Image (cartoon, rainbow, N blue to C red; front, side, top):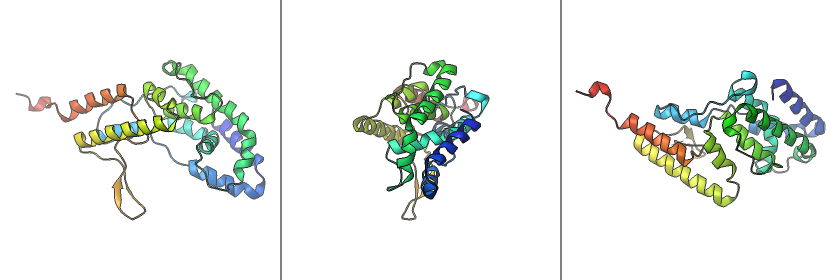
Length: 230
């Protein structure tokens, strides 16, 4: 996937929708038109450690963020599959006619990433006829999730599994906040109050990754520095 191909896909979407419903398609795009920043990098930067973020090879030698921006036309279908779109959006019924085409594009993106990143060769989509199963892997790569974290995430598809991941993520975040004294991003809620996102957010480390995090955080926050040694 490159910028040219991404533009072609976006044009295909707009051609599939009658002009009078283009504003509805604009609304879908607005929901995914955000600047992504790796939650792994954000965590590393906040607590002051390195070595958790996994650097993958990206086609065309572009940044992971840029590559992920190219797949936005595909991500619209992921959003629809998850039910995260405005009610009564008339564009949806038209672009669903192009579903198979965009499923093929998602598979191509997955295959091109897999071909140049052998560490993900055994990570398969949970459902090979579902776009969001491919996007979960592609986005995990673009966000620098360790391979074992992507593997754990892609198989969590039923409510019980997702609840278990969210619960474990909350436990990890609370423990790291207590140890480091750091908090997640500050924002203002609907009541005008300043609150913080969890320190570990939009990413659930696998147990293997969390052990690595614990080791690095322990070294930084508990071991005396050499300058203090006598």
